[in-house]
Amino acid sequence: MNFTIRPYEPADADWLLQCQVALQEHELAIHDPRLAQTRTAPLPATHDYMKLFWQSIAENQGVALIGEIGGQRRGLIAGHVVHAPWPMEVWDSSHYGYVSDIFVEPLARGSGLAQALLDALAAHLHQVDPKLTRLRINVLAANEIARGAYEKAGFVPYEVMYERPLSGGGK
Image (cartoon, rainbow, N blue to C red):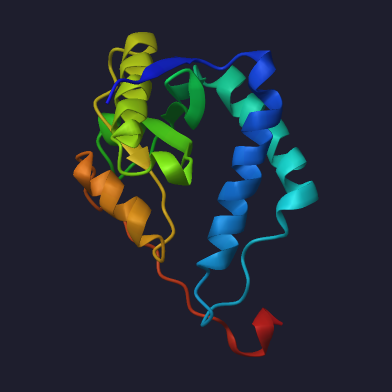
């Protein structure tokens, strides 16, 4: 399939917001019922998140990219450079590209668009910081479809976070 990957433009703002809301709705739907709720309602929280989204991109050599199929927006990806020195890790493990957001519309899933978006983000981040050797992404454990797509794209589990509810709600 033929994709066009291009930088975000202001005309994409409403569509980007819709994608972020759809992403939050999806994560709410697959939330593990054994755990306390971790996600808020998509609106108005998504508006607050978008402020952080743009701040991270602006301050950390980031970018937002739009993936099109046949001239129609079908996916987005955003990411930035993270530099978080940690005494127990080698330099290039604490200096990496981070995929903060990826969304592919349901009718474009399985088309290879996610792979194309990941490749485009990796190329951008490596161009702005040639010392980068790693690209990382977080995913909900319950999001098996996304985990499969990331593994297909060459990602391997690095750190796994487990959560256990505290009795009494942590009080």
